Image (cartoon, rainbow, N blue to C red; front, side):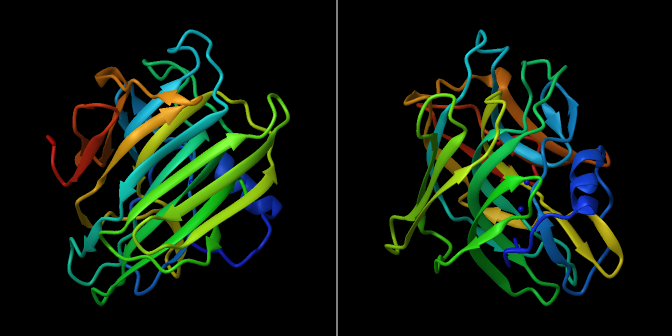
Length: 269
């Protein structure tokens, strides 16, 4: 579900295979400069843990067969710093429809995903970079031409223009810096889930492909979470903790007024 092949490269058959069948996290190698490849649907470990997502996920079965046609939120672009010296690390903050757990127990998932967000990455030499993007899985993410900085407040909205049309408007705005991007795209969605997520994206590099390592993130979280035009009404049963190889990588706080924070490398938040 993730930073560029933000070059406009179209998904190939091999890329489609990769996105569809990557089922478990791959331990990322220490790469000099791995190239981000894309964001991925949830790698579910159990009801409240994932191998690549942390945040909140609502599903149509959990919500009583509600289908999702709109999602939005605000977030502050977090400051990213290196967690392990000499390692390239990647993170994404985003909203989306699809790709998550359909029910609170996560016994079923959605394999479509339309999303937009920001990237907070750290190169192997410790230099941080920040960018904006959108993605329609299984195609790779596409860059949004926008200069963003840590601490900028972002607003994003995804909504279906006409009910059951599968034509979507995607908007992401830097309310601090003033940049904004909107596009209209056709995309066949199952409308099955809505989410507000911090992710370790899938990357490729000289040592292969896998779910990337997470940097330290400061001031990370979402406010004004909404779906289908109303406040999201987030509940603790919808939270997702990011766990890789038995280690807690990121944990969301309890929701308050449709807002929450995400704490990296911490079992509590």
